[in-house]
Image 1: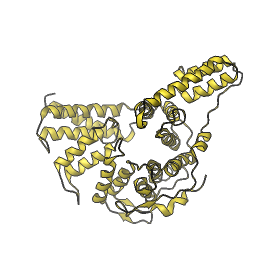
Image 2: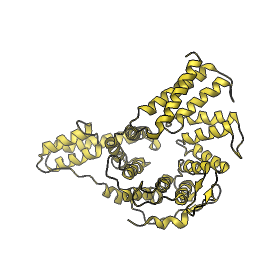
Image 3: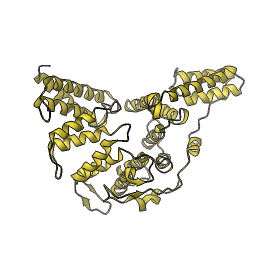
Image 4: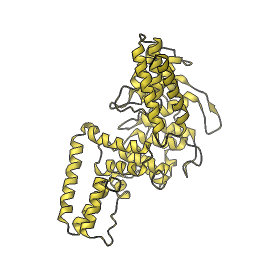
Length: 387
């Protein structure tokens, strides 16, 4: 695994939050075929007959007693077919037909294949990492998702050691592949998150805010990107929002104008979806005002509404339960909109539901206290409206 130092000369354009281009330094990342080979599956065939191998394949295809895993099912069907099972050969044909049906129902990489990928996201949120790994693997290497979403998510599981042995080198390999081979900005955003973490979080990675924000900027400003990331701008904006310590010990004070620029970029999205959390942050900026950013209730409503307007935006995303709560308050008090008690109650109910959905997740973690607060505020507001 080559050193990640190769990227440093391209990273640190921290002053270029808007305008200047950042060069992406292609450094010989692995190819897709090499990545597939490194994730190749093997069937445990010792002592198993063709019929038993076929049965194992059926188990994985149907999720019968094991996690559903189409790629693993195919491996066992292939082994059974090689052992002489004609049924296994037909099972492979049927499995391929299922794959094609999913892809046919996935225009522009959305539709069925996206819904399948989202089941992995839900599994991760619920702490079922074995299922998440299988879904992400299938998305990447069985269905061959045209947008290759599953590969980055496999990297996240390897990064965190969630359901698999932690492997930082392999996670970095995936992120570099996404960034340099596919030209996907989210690869750089993922690298930025590695550097942003405190020392000791990820073995072999030293905390560096300079490298973190440099990668976040590369995620959408880098030359040669095929798809700019819409989360990277939000991660950069979060750093400008709070201020941060540079590696040389100097402190960068909050810059709300740069933060606003980043949040706006993230809220703009990629044509398919956008960052709902960035929309929420913009709502708070315009509701409260910031140095260099004027208070504007109408704009606040606009971005709060956008935060919850897309079907891809889920209640478990950061800021979404709070967004529903804010919209309830705006409609109750007539801030930027005509007062409407019925609409307010509807949004408060959604805030309550969203907060509870977060609290029901196994890995809510640090969000628990905040979600409890949203839940209590929503309940109190509903009571005040006689609900």
